[in-house]
Image (cartoon, rainbow, N blue to C red; front, side, top):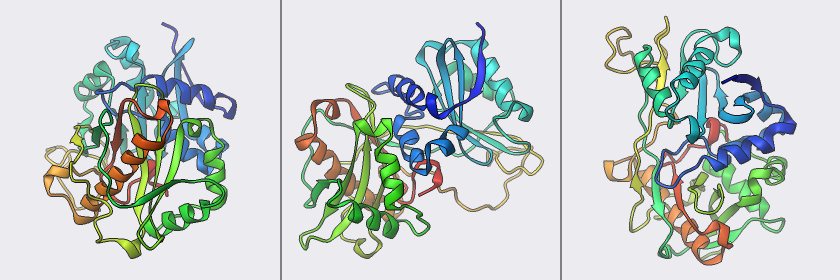
Length: 330
């Protein structure tokens, strides 16, 4: 196996998105998704390409999205799930800053898939960091109505899409220009932005629904409720999605910036809660997290009744943190 590591180019992004989509498996780990790439595309194709790393041996075998300093989110092809040689190469590239993937000091890998790779991380001294729980729902059966009128976003209501996004997330930089950049990208060909309107025709909630193709799990991200319309139950379905356990791996560092809370080598120190942590619907999460779920049900119901055939099959995953979006940038 002759493996190469390269930074993506703008010209290669469509191929990357297609490969990542083909790796999604219903009932499997929720790994890096075309929707993650599509959302980050809103910052510009050049910006996204500079953040993507590609491992290939002729065909693409793994993709990493460097979301923020010291964090990479991995997608790994099922064909190399248990390939120890490939996992060894991945680990070497992630562990050596000179290879241009992760910087010196603390680092973090979201390894949601890749059995051999995850085992090697653990055996090589990487520490389990922040466990989180994405929520998953099967879309085979019709979804109950939650009372919102849901519209697909186009030119006539894109201003509402942008306005609610900015009102839902305090630090949002989302703009009309960013929506157009995102909607022109290849992952959006299988996606829809949706706006939920209440009985007074006020735009109260938004989400972007990303499909990976027929029979594969989709992704709701980002999703948010306007700050002036919270507390009205827009985010709580009558039946919650099922939780799936996922986790990150942190590389020990002198600063102990990323570590397991129980690690003797890196004793726990107070630090702000991560924006990327997830909360299960059944775990007594914060009210804002629970409120998100009725909004999700509305969007699932919309897909079940209005979307095309490719958008109907498989399941949908949603992150329960009300201020979560791809890369932590909104």
